[in-house]
Image (cartoon, rainbow, N blue to C red):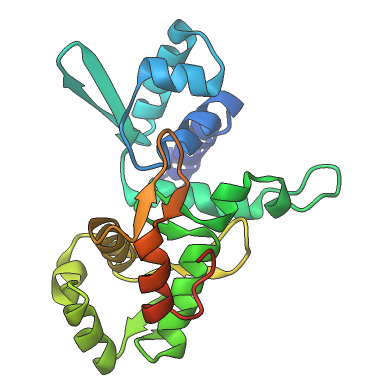
Length: 233
């Protein structure tokens, strides 16, 4: 078998692993960013626990999820941010059903603001990203964002070390196409650092058992001050 043929065979195996409705639902559940048990994933994917175990084994074999044992439970999570990026891309490319667009069918809270694995998406994530570009803090490039000289100082004052985010072994500031809004939001290590900072400040809060995020009362004021054009505020 040639190297090309070997690569094609590997891609085919990978496509079979990810191309299953139950496994897709499990990966979508894990895009919340939290680690979940097999029982939680079985419930969310609407299958029996024994069936869920088989699907999770296939996802592990494909390098899509990792598992960690803690006490009597095993917790599953996405293997890397790249898996979340792949899922977001698949949702962007997925054709609409019955001729209806994908966006309006999703839960309103998710459309307003949600976690895309570890960074902000939805109207809130897009609004913040666009405000940072308009304020000259970020500069839009082909498939990513660049931090301007002014932006380095702004992020430092906001409590985010740009150099530390850049040094992480992942993409720094990706331009992530939002599957519900079809516009770009800030992803990568910088997007994750910004989302974490907003949570630490108490401006946004994660909803229980959901990827959706809620803007707090103090967050409404502060987000309006810092990101005047942020959506969902």
